[in-house]
Image 1 (cartoon, helix red, strand yellow):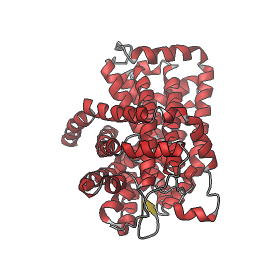
Image 2 (cartoon, one colour):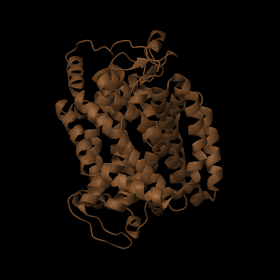
Image 3 (spheres, one colour):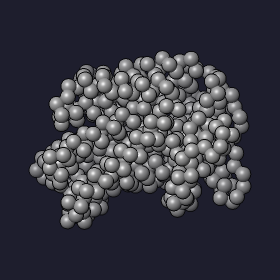
Image 4 (spheres, rainbow, N blue to C red):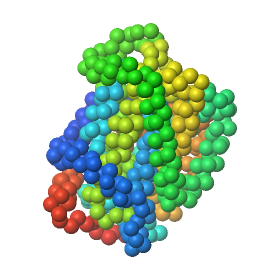
Length: 462
């Protein structure tokens, strides 16, 4: 295990180095400027379209996708609102200091343009497989948008995606839940793993329609409940909110000294952990969310892009900010705690007796929905590589991995997930940069009132 940890540590240091920061922020800024800040300016329009897209208007739209535009967003959010919002934010603050939160925000603001472009291209270049289901995502917009000579890049993304799903979307989630349930309620880790496996298996084996149906119900309810709980904590800690914002903005550009159990952090650490945990949480640039948006019942790629970009805003600007403020308005972060336990202790400091339980339950539900969303992402990547007949094999392997993750060593699991995150992002970001003219043209056409079609009706069965 030590050898594996060393190998992944070395790879992680390279893929999350300056090149990745430049790629993630650079492509996001380029898209945001190329779109003339449209994702930020049209945020209200995105929410309006999301509300309108809660269900197919009539039966005739069902042939245009498998799930409603709203449920496509909820499926994407189910995969992003997870341990990144609870443990990831805490880890960013514990390792990068309060300034890391500022860089999470920056990542989200440029990430809205990235997520918009991803979903637009996913609908534009999606295909229909042999079962009649719509399939799309980076591997398809690389194949159909960039052409056969770039096929290798699509294969790389699909490989990293299929493997990464077992890390970021499976074992990390079950591990975090098992740890939280064991610490808070004394539940054995193996039992938590088995329970999650049974519940997730019942949904995952039913495919995208069942996943979207469950996500469409669970994500809004749990998301709102968590935000309300966080607001209650902030009401209790109202006097410290101004100071918390001051810490975030000051330490985004200044090193933070060691205090208590906190080891201190340089500005580069704030940027690195802020960007890394921001991406881990909202997944903008990873290329995962467009796989869900490709299944939406829509003929208009721009409209789906406007809905998709809300995922980044809701995940990071709303949910992660609530978590960060809860942590920074308490003093627990100075004591050297990190991960989900830091968030739980911060909630408990303001709401003694049941703050821990709120975080444990939220973590369990968020992680459960993340497992559902990522099972679909990994499945589609696997299908791209090995064909439609391989889908059920992947689903079974994915479900069986859940209890193994619950009992594994947390440090190594986080390291592996972080590494594959970056390796997924690289092919996707290259494709987004090369296909940016398509994004700009279709967006301009849409806002000029011209018809924007989803692309050619392509049939696909590897």
